[in-house]
Image (cartoon, rainbow, N blue to C red; front, side):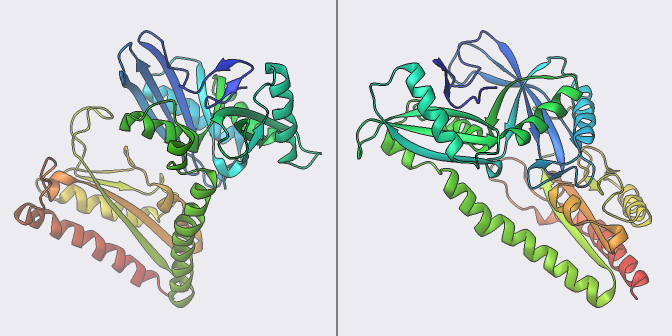
Length: 370
């Protein structure tokens, strides 16, 4: 299965599989740590003529995916099928992604006079050096261009353990899909940014150096993302050990009208508890009751926003940690268009209701303390 960011036996895929199609559609699947997402894109003949046609997401069972590995293939397949049904996507051919943490990559210098078969053979040898001999691998490569320091051509080789690739393929097939391309998620993000910024699709070696590579992306993850979540887990454990219970309030805001993603206006107060998996049902119901009693505001529990990674990762009612996400519409407290000003007189209306919710959380915690 080819990866969309490289040349595969002479078929250039660097520009993405959408290039040159006449208002054709392609479906992409993202298997994350807490949910699966599906999108259907269409592209026309004009430059940057991309359009989001359909999209949906579905929460995953807890620990169905851990550290990028698909642990519960059946659960992921079921979630994918539900997401496809929500979005109304009927296309079977799809593009899958694999996180870079499950891949190994290196740039090698090869002679510039190799035939296609010779180049492929060299790359295959380099790919197998990235993993122990006993492990089967899927690999692909991209010719970056002339190697300005060593001569010849620079070739980026990327490989992944075949079992990790097959996990995703099997889950997709269980949902009735037919995977056609496996892309490295970070490469796909990089190309999207390049496209949005209008950068030339044929990058020079100097330009390519300005884009974050696998090592820099991994370094950022290790320096920022993992320490953040580790510290959060550490603090929750400390509070739990001291008081016997802990609560996590994960608050966000979003524009109330997003026609690209949702029809109509979103509820003002969107509460999420991962369908009850991250928080005691009694507390969730109490919070919903407060939201529904808030005059002039609308509220929903586990609607479009059921809780993201923080809520799902750290919420564990059986273990004494109760996590709730609040996704509040920006129109409840600020301007949703330029200059995006904070509106105190508008915010004053919703503040008492958010305060009541937080007081309910604190009251629940106090009632459960040992």
